[in-house]
Length: 374
Image 1 (cartoon, helix red, strand yellow):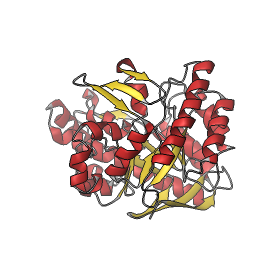
Image 2 (cartoon, rainbow, N blue to C red):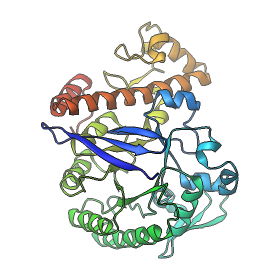
Image 3 (cartoon, helix red, strand yellow):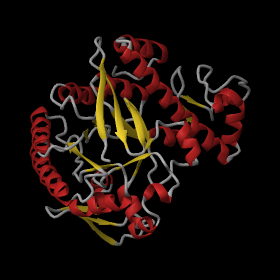
């Protein structure tokens, strides 16, 4: 079955939404944060642990799996989920973000994008049709249109041309999609900070009738105020009955802000990336356990958290692991940070259902004192 979306409640106080993504691998409550498993692995965690820190939906990277191990090997395993021993739901991005992140080693043409391998330098090409074909082989439940993700400040004229290209690529990708009965293909809305470009892109994608719509081109260096302005505008025009996905966002307050603007789905490498550098998300804000101040701290990482890391280990021990360069430290903080976001999204859903999401946002800001912008 393809993925379907059921909208179950809209918060009377804020307009935030609760819903259910129905997939062949299970039902996923929304709003939901999806851990990122770039190379068919959520870094340092085993599949059973991923189940404990997620709602059963994770993300993998089309570009990286295409290069290593390659689609032929994944196809012989029966798809990415069999390859990585994951029996939950899976979303794959399109490779479009690499158009942004690998800007120094790629060229954009109407046919697609010409890359150089980010390690070997070997020439590569990916078209919208290639991206969809690769994702069909990867076997994810949700696949993404191949788009251009330009810099937020690229300028109006460039972004206008980029949006038109993204629309043409979306139409080509939809025509190339061979597994619409089992994979839901989402469209991606681009347009930088310009409301007219965002609206035009969305309107044209709606004509193609995608089962879901993502907001791309955010969380790539713009200010919090700029992100909020885009979300405020998009909240008023995105289809109510379709899932809304904000790509690449994982900061707790960005998640809450996104939910306040009607977003249903999020993903980001942030929680595991900062964990590998010794930073933990907590109910009182981010802490860096490598700091000397925690050398003799016998309290849990987050006294308000009930995950196995916080139940079993002290800040002092976690600091010791990082100072000793022990891999266990990376594993424990990665587990905790993802669990923290899973718990946060559960609290968000409860607040929406109780029609008090606005109050919840204010309480979280007061408790954790986030960075300026909210």
